[in-house]
Length: 461
Image (cartoon, rainbow, N blue to C red; front, side):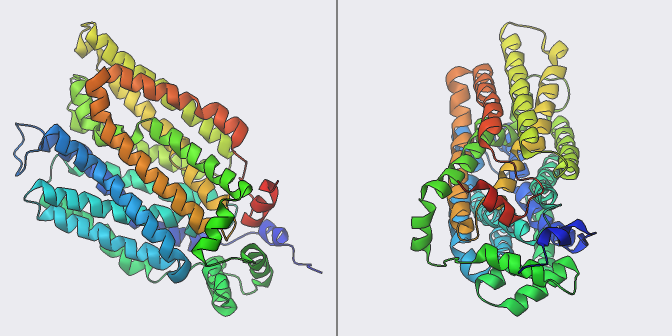
């Protein structure tokens, strides 16, 4: 009979600093991915301007491809990541993700034509796709249930730090110097993360109990982890490594339903236009005719997103996942409605100077609302909802789908604006956002504070 109830072990004071150390090390590569996203706003504005002193000039069509090719690269990266995780482990996949990210900066440093930029963005996408397909799964496997949401939220929001740095540096650094600076977190990540142990789940999956115990002791700082090892063994019991067997099991109704729930949540995230609004932030503010320098406003918006992400990290495991999603859905819908209202008032010939506060407030509210829920919670649920056998295939399906949605969002933004005008674009995004509320209330399971095994047991039908 099992006396050592895992819950009893979790009720005592736990040591979490090794798990936070691993998360902070991982945040370096996430910052690198964020820098790739943050690069777009300042440099697309400069590359499409006739006044900026740039070595290249892009047409609107070329700029839309530069903005969106990162997301096609994410599709490739997610496939590679999912196929490799089962065999070499999530840690090695995450380490490898630093290589295409580093290569992307080398290509941008030596960019002499738009083809170099296309290649650079595609490489950054491959690295980003590999990261996001593996990171939430890795963190969910090493984290204690009491901090799992915070660890995943912390790393999702570390991307905002990279975007902020990209927006802050872009107006003042050449593309070449930006590339050199952005190489730093990639190199540090590869060096430091190589010293962090692999997830104990990976070792158990391959039958290496001794290494699994050593890994768990490193993350928990406990000498006796037998009870937790038994719980992990129960969680990974029956796990297959054959991709075709997994795919067949994934298509079973219970597993496929979970995947559709997570994908649906990501759909709402992308239908807010988040990717497009961040890639075109400086251009949007310029077109809104604000009286403050657009690049300065974008930098301030980026900093506010970091603060919102920090707050979400601290509160992630203190409130229900659904609570954050509802707040996020309502906030993004309101912000997009206000942004559309601004462009409607401009079309009625209102004085733009008197309206300067409106687009700034709208985009501030938008960033804060996204950071509070729709950015972090889907990744958290992806790491929590699937059993050991389904994690990789589910992550691959979700992340490849995400990359296609992200590509579509970024690529269609400018044609959509050209077709119907800014106000209708933002109002459409806002209407889509509000449907997050009923979706979260009726379809999202509550996972806060539960172990991975408990989540599987509670979601079984």
